Image (tube, rainbow, N blue to C red; front, side):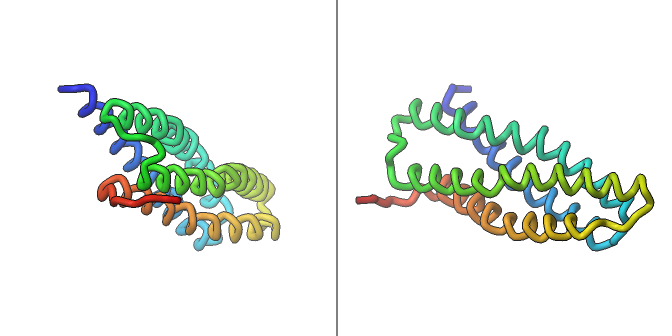
Length: 159
């Protein structure tokens, strides 16, 4: 197996992890939230934070490394249109993901405190959930765009 094949495989796995973990985290958090069960929400939020830190963070770090290395080995310039647009969408994704990580930590802490106290979730939790939910859409569609660009490599030029 050649280096380019290994890099391509690692890069595709990283993209799959970003897309799959993002969708899975959102799904499980939304389903738990809809139950209104404070203990369940606290448990799922803890799992979501762990999954995001283990899987998403690892892929977030690996993607630019494997992508840049792959482009170098193949001979693509990082300023090539589809790559530049991919990088822009990647930065956009990060601009939404970084606050979401902090929000998830806060939601987990608020849900755990409410569960320990036997209290309902505070209004702050619901405010954070709405922001978390809203941030998910642009981040998810930006990752979908990056994957599409990776697969199709459309010819595009930027002035």
